Amino acid sequence: MKNTLYRSQAYRILALVGLLSIAISSVASAASDDVTPTVREAMVKMSDEIARYIAADPDTKGQVAIGAFQGPSSSGAGARIVQSLRENLKSKCEIVDVGAAYTISGRFMGQKLDGQFVTIIEAEIGDALGNTVQKLRRKVVTAIEEGLAFFGPSSVDLSAQSQAAKSDKPDSEQSKTDSTTAEILVSSIVKPETHLDANRKTRMNPADGSPYGLEIALKQADGKYRSLPITKSDGIATVDLKADQIYAVRLFNDSARPVGCRLTIDGINTFALSLDANYRGKETIMELQPHAKFLIKGWHHTGNLSHEFRISDYGDTPASKFGVFDGVGMLTATFFEATAPQGYAATREFATGIGDEVAMRYRDGQSKFGKPIAAVSVRYVRPAPPTDLPPK
Image (cartoon, rainbow, N blue to C red; front, side, top):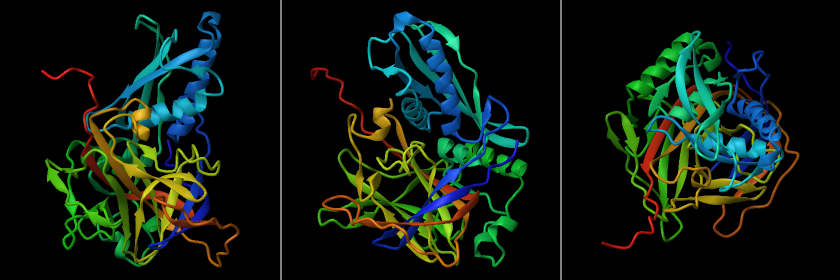
């Protein structure tokens, strides 16, 4: 199996704090029916299998429910699988919450396979009594960036050396082999490490001295954002977020060249729920310009609006809509090799957002992204949902 490189069309964002560019990746399909580069492609194939099974039983009326996909306790990324299944099944079946003859559920896991780190997704169809009536073929997702988003190592540096990004030599000439990368990722998940910036303790870095980083910032009453302290315990980085608080993610690129960055929450790309067909359901990557920091305030909604990141105690977040109501929330920034085009010219521009929405201007551009070179993840504990029980 080969690592997947991105051949991307980019969409640029001119933010209040700097210039970002957004790219939609285009990846070739794998040869095997069970092996695909991305979760999106795996779920397209899995949804086709589900639809065929449902269609073969006329008593189902074409209805199906989608349950949870379980993984490690430190990851809520099963929401990503459910979201992708819903997106792909909605044109093939009627998705209902209750009363369906069949329910789809499953689990996911990580593994080093053939010298490469892969994400494995297993699913089954259960009947109205909870009995398994059909096990679907498991899907093996080969792109290592999917593993980073699903398992969220606190800090992992995949470049040839921790200071590689500060070198004049391009990252593409310094990347580790697939086998070595897989070993590093497995180790970073099993034995996590947390690298706080030496000069800014609210910032998480992939490694000591890395030019890339992430902060979580809490929105204040005056509309300004205050960086939250990061707590580390047994290699896991966490921030304290409470119900109804609004936060943003600050991304850093202190290097001398552009870098790509994919931001996910519980494995879900922050552009995955966009109403813009250019973004929705696609693997969007932002280009961070050199020597700059960027404040990402919400889920992209339309060309000029985003919905703020808000901590909700019940059913008001994208993850909760896909079956994750409690447990651990996980924010992951994955950084990629990037080559910015020369002589860039804008072809489209949108208006600035209004009210409490993110204020950004968008314009098209082109960038190419290669292998992931680093990633950081920060977790928070979700508030417990209401139980509807009377007080004791």
